[in-house]
Image (cartoon, rainbow, N blue to C red):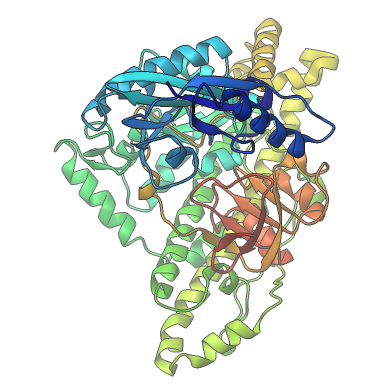
Amino acid sequence: DFYAVRSAALIEDGKTSSSAGQFKTILKVTKETLSEAILSVVDDARLKLGNDFRFSVIIQECIDPDLAGVIFSRNPTGGREMVLEYNHGVGETVVGGESVKQIKFLFERSYIHKFKFSHTEELAKLAREIEDIYQWPQDIEWAIKDERVYILQTRPVTSVKEANWQGIKYLENELKNEDYYYFEQTTLAETFTKPRPLALSMLEAMYAQGGPIEEAYKKCGVKYFATDQLRMFGNELFVDKQAEVRSLFPILGYKKFNSQIPKIECLSGSFVTFANQVALSFMSLAPYQKLNQRVDELLGVNLDESDSLEKKWQFFIENYALIFEVNLRSQKALTTLRHMLKNDATNLSGLLNYDLPQLANFEQNKFTYESDSLVGNSVSIDDKSDFVETGNKSVIENTKQFDNWWNRLPEWRRHGLSPYIKKARDYMALREKARIASVCLISHVRRAVEDYGEVVFKEESELVYFATVDELVSESISLEVCKQRESQYLDNQKFSFPVRIASFIYQDENLSQESIGLSAGVTEGSLVRVEDLDAVSGSKILYTKFLTPDLTQHLDKIVGIVTEQGGLLSHMAIVARELGLPVVCVQKPLVEKSSISINGSTGEVSYL
């Protein structure tokens, strides 16, 4: 008989740290050399641990496996799925980082992968049993000999945080009766970050049939269907991707083929789908002057503070269609320019803020408004961040790269690009003006809401944000109900969720391999979350899920931003470009607290 002499994970590993691979392991030890092997492992540990010597040794039967590997009961990046890695021979080839085969699957669908690896279902059940014992995601080493499964060792998955674990358990209970689902946190979650009931009910009204979003699409020649696409998990807002695509393209979907790319699922609605695709593809940018005039008129309206809450809310709904239409056409202008530049050696994020030679400057925001009365930077009533205006200045430190690029272009190319660049910049300025108008409107509503809260809830006036807009307008608000909602909201703060939640495995290889540059510049530093900014010294690059408006309060502490979601039109991205702060949107998770370098022009991210 042979034995394996190794360190025991029970002592060396905890929920937040792991010593995997740091201590000596001796395989195929005979009875005669067992004492010698134990002393060798202990002496190795003593050298590495020094005075802090707490150590235990485990002696196991050593087999020569046919297959070996590891199974994570949850994805180390924080997802719900299991991750199985395996190879022929001893497990050292797997834990040592050599090339292995990998399968990702949800526990309830492990049987699907039996054709790939016959022991998948058995290993999944064992992993779940072990996870239930320790009440934490587990990193489990296993081996198979003569069709028998051996569990060699288990240790906590240290990269999973408590909030991730609580979120996983919440989702499994919430989705246990749903056969198919595909939810994603889109740019909506950037604006409506953990919305309270009032903010959520306002957003639902915007997306409802007959609401301002339907009207805006209609102005662009697009038929919109209200499909109940908003879904809350805990306090976080997700979009039902199946419902979202059906709101514009009725024949497309994700469900039938368990796909992360929409495909044709039926023929009913073919004409509307085709018509909408044509309308969106050929959306006109000609209405710029008319839209600009209408936004100016909206900003010039004297908002009467004595108006009722109902009247203020109605005025907001009536005018939000204009703001959403500006957003749609601005995105079209940007998409068109990106398409024109796809073969050019320059970056769109820097180009938007740099005045190229021979090119007329883009429209500046030349209008007045009472900035002192504005709170927040978005259309969400929950957003109470300090108002920041953008669009009146341009900071690009390295102008030489743009000069060189522009001057190298042939005259016909410069002539062809100029109108598209100018149009994109004009619409960017208009979009900023429309954003300010939306902040004016929602600030007008917020003041009425808070006045109402002070009257009804007295010293607990913040409870008004836990009522719905219909309850406020109809004056059918309940103190008890609002308190219950607040209590549930506070309890839900313990949850953290991945950006995507699906009943199928989202294949990372289908994501773009390239990150996206949102604000030009190059910098390096430690990659840290908001909660760790004060705990980490040196240069820091903020690692965030979304480019939320409230991030402006942290700009003096960071040298750059890496975000999991965001676009060039994000308010925070625009602010960053004006400050010369590099921003990159990554397509895949990064390792927190690692030292990295980012290039906001190219989108490149490198570990140092």
